[in-house]
Image (tube, rainbow, N blue to C red; front, side, top):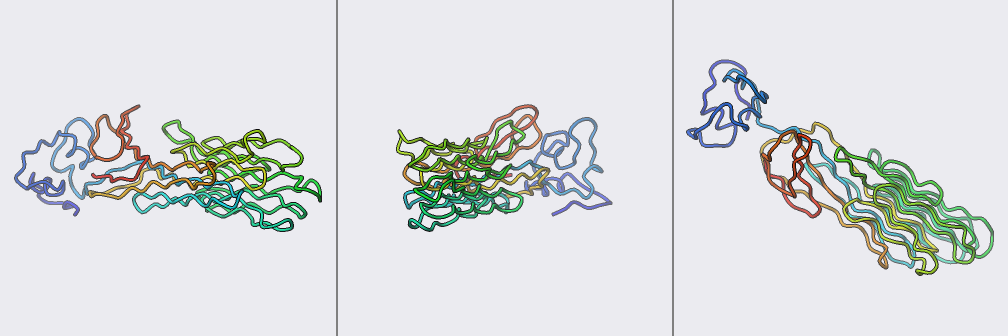
Amino acid sequence: MTLPASGTISLSDVNVELLQSATATIGLGDATPRLLAGVPSGVISLSDFYNKTYSLSVDLLVVAGGGSSGGYGGGGNGSDSSAFSQIAVGGGKGAYVINDTSGNPGNSGGSGGGGTIVRYAAGTAGGAGTAGQGNSGGNAVQLSTSQWRGRNGGGGGAGAAGSGMNGGNGITWFNGGTYAGGGAAGSGPFTNYGAGTPGAGGGGTYAGFASGGRGNPGTVNTGGGSGGPEIGGAGGAGGAIQQNSFVVTLGTYTITVGAGASNSGANGGSGIVIVRYSGTSAIATGGSISVSGGYVYHTYTTSGTFSF
């Protein structure tokens, strides 16, 4: 409901807009009426409530789960995260080998998974990212026509595409954290051409030959892609959505935090949802609540609800 644009407004009208009893005790200078009126301090009157709807302007970060590597026949895309009808797409699985002469490309997702080298054929391409959320995975590069001598592709990140064996970088948000970096790829098993660098913001690394070459996981609660194995692409990062000054009206909303995909321990990083608004104390409930720099943060590392 929206309050009248002119004429008489009573305290009972303000109470009803705030979903309180019409006869509840209320002070116009209290925090909640001031939020409705848009008058954070100083003199306030009933005329300040003309044509106002009780809502909250928030900055929103939604990061999906990262994709896993594609080696050893397992893995998959990360799971989606969502908040206030904003859906971040899970990161793409890295590519994997079918046989000595063929392989699948990296999966598309929030960011695409990296491509894979193939024993006796050209390497496969990285998967595509989702527009506005992430970038493509890197293509594999064949360096010889024999024995898997080449470099796998790195996973795409929310901020940049996978480049060669390197994972794409993630994005840095208002809280200073960096999210959704792509996983790093490793080279083939017969000739060590080195390994890529994970993307900033949670990308997994390549474990190396001494560790079985399976790759390391993306960092939890960042949406990072996992590192790639000896034969198979690196995982892509989960999609990331940033919405500034997003308006939330009164109600209870479901927050879903996506899981990272798993594959032999080289899991994609789980996602995260963060809601922040201006203030020095919480006026909503849900998630882990903190106050910093004049803002209230509601952080979700598992699914829950946001109530305002």
